[in-house]
Amino acid sequence: MNITVAGTGYVGLVTGVCLAEHGHHVTCLDIDEAKIETMKRGHSPIYEPGLEELMRKNRDRLVFTTDYRLAYGGAQVIFIGVGTPEKKDGSANLRYVFQVAKQIAESARQDCVVVVKSTVPIGTNDRVEELIRREAAPGVRLTVASNPEFLAQGTAVQDTLHASRIVIGAEDENSAQVLRRVYEGFDAPLLVTNRRSAEMIKYASNDFLALKISYINEIANLCETVGADIEDVARGMGYDRRIGSQFLKAGIGYGGSCFPKDTKALSWLASFNDNELKTVKAAIEVNENQKFKLIKKARRYYDDFHGLTVAVLGLTFKAGTDDLREAPSLVSIPILLDDGARVKAWDPVGVENYKRHYPTQIEYCRTPEEALQDAGLCLIFTEWPQVKELSPAVFRQRMRRAIVLDGRNCFSLSSMEGQGIVYDSIGRRAIVDGI
Image (cartoon, rainbow, N blue to C red):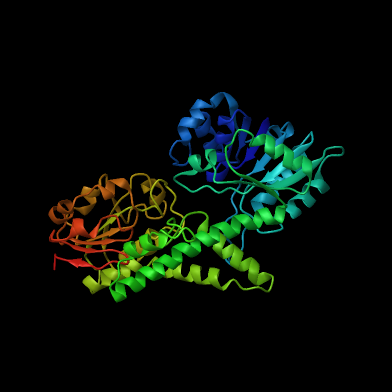
């Protein structure tokens, strides 16, 4: 089929490339000329494992353009995969979605199914359909379907090619059948429902996972107080199939492009409609507080950070991505800098993005070992494999004072025991051999 995808971020580009992998002819549209030129050369503008290889493999079925009239004119299916960033009040900014919808209505020259893949508040698809039907050319029938994505950054390609489920929200049988054809080669459970239910499935899924993360982090904080071990607790919980083991890894909070804005957007939507999602509001509050966890721990070992050299290992919100949105490092590093610390940071893919926030205030290092050199404190924000591979001896030999605060529980307690270092993690007892 001839498919156009509007937007070449994590959702749009991954969707377009994976559809091309399944044999469709896909036009990827974006307003950013520099990004389009990068993609025409076979390079991905975002870091996502496996994506660039698939772009090159399917280059004969992929077109990249900034010309929306060309992109929409002959498409059988148009996916809207643009961003819906958070507004100051927590609601979703739908400006880009409606801007694309208006352009589709102006440009479409044949019957077409418009598929909203962006995460949007419940009822948005109805509004999109009203707009395009009002603006469409005479004789052109445009229908709207919801098809939310369920990918995670760092595993987005695999999450799309081997989806946990495909959800289609449609109000007419033709739209549902067209999307069945689009996903014919995908081996995944397929649910067809109405548009509003599809929209809600996306929010309810993401917010439930955020709830699990905030819950296990609260339990982890209590474990530190009462002397329990969060990893044993989580393992014991995970054996219960009703609970499951996923998203029970304690840490310093969730980040990225989905959970933070989706929890706030659903909470805002509930309040706007005179409802209150108390559990979601609590998850948001817990997550915001959890981001300060390593700074609070650091103050146990230092009264202030003035003149202290601090090694930061990992800048992105999780491993496998260069995304910094809502990353805990963006909360903690400003505190260190304001207190007069010297910050030496390492990240394998996130440095260039971080330089947009702090171009000169931080020393960016080529290796974890370089960042650790002469540091009096180490903060681990991201569970990169290169961090997990470090031996306790590296911390002890490189650092001036080996105090390691691990926000992702990268190391077992047994491996850190008796190594002459301070190792303080999340939800587990602190090892203080270095004091």
